[in-house]
Image (cartoon, rainbow, N blue to C red):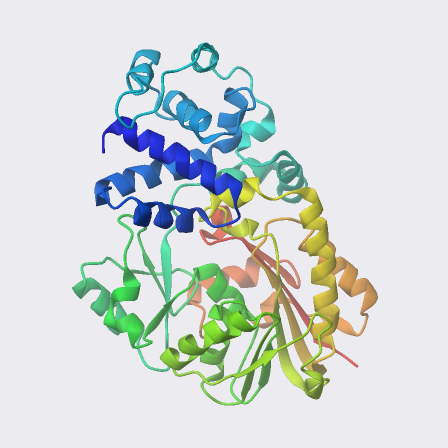
Amino acid sequence: MTPAARLAAAASVLDSIAQGRAPAEVVLKAWGAANRYAGSKDRRAVADRVYRVLRARGRLVWAMGGREDGRALVIGSLALIDGLPLEEIEALHSGEGYGPRPLSKQERARITAGEGDLPGWVAAGLPEFVVEDFKTTFGDRWSEEARELMAPRAPIDLRVNGAVAAVDGVAAELREAGLSPEPTPWSAWGLRLPSEPPPNVQALEAFKAGRFEIQDEGSQIVSWLAGAAPGMTVVDYCAGGGGKTLALGQSMEGQGTLVACDVVSKRLDNIRPRLARAGVEADLRLIGQNGGGVEDLNNKADLVFVDAPCSGSGTWRRRPEDAWRLKPDEVERLHALQLRILSQAAQLVKSGGRLVYVTCSMLSRENEATTDAFEAAHPDFQPVPVTATVNSQNLTGGARERLATSAAGHRLRLSPASTNTDGFFLTLYERRA
């Protein structure tokens, strides 16, 4: 493919992403499958352009006069991100072969006018309503949090399955495969790989044999802080893909009862091979929207882990397209859903048992607002300080020391800027009655 043809392809992919709900990664794979002539370098160049545009989308839309189509965004990226002069951009838009058509007068005017004075939310690279929330939540640090949340290429984190492998052993296997793992600073079972070039770790025998799983370190941290232990009855109330289910099972060391719940049967079906690969046993339960299906566990669980449905804003460094799909009314819908789910899950916790609320969101409406409302309605659930669980041996010594001095009561925030993880929010409760 010529450089011009790559630009046309990137514009087409961006339009496909905007027209649906599929992740950018899925759309790019579909494009590659439908265009077999594109070599690996072509696919890499198209993907790089697509992600660079998605991360700077707000700025590019502003610069192109409000246009949101793939062509306009690609043109804007050549001027504002690549810094190409007009003559070079025009040369790439000659209309020849499979390249894009020539620039219009309006497009020329836009890319030669410059950006001017950008509104704060445009410069931050996030939707306007999100920026206002960040300012309230993070104060003077809000711009750093915004910048790191949309930073290019998050690392690839792995969690070693302590039931069948040791960290050093898995690290050695990864090095033999030509990779460069480093221990994660928080999770004692974590290994971190650079994202470039993208490692295909799922093809390795160590992955197929269940010696490690792909799991962001932030996800590992909140799993360890939940406090699962051998002999407990543990309920993962919103199991989803099952990553935290497996981590909870690792903490239980194969002793006790692990129950994984979800409202979608396909998700539970997808967990089964992961459980088998890791050697973890769990009772899979399909629950109804009203929480039905787990009544036999009412007042019996030692730990109920609620990884609630959320905006996923804490993962925008991995899926920047989701930032521009999120609207304020969706956040309100999620807040109401989270509160309902928390109230349902609370019924399973026994006296003296623990309830853990987790999101991978950076937004206060899904985090503090949801837990504030739950606490007001459930005085029998008392906050448990995060420092009460930091002695987990699944955490590194540095992590235990840092959490002991920096955790704010029973709530904890993780973010790309503060912990170099995806964004997570954790709250701990104990049932006193």
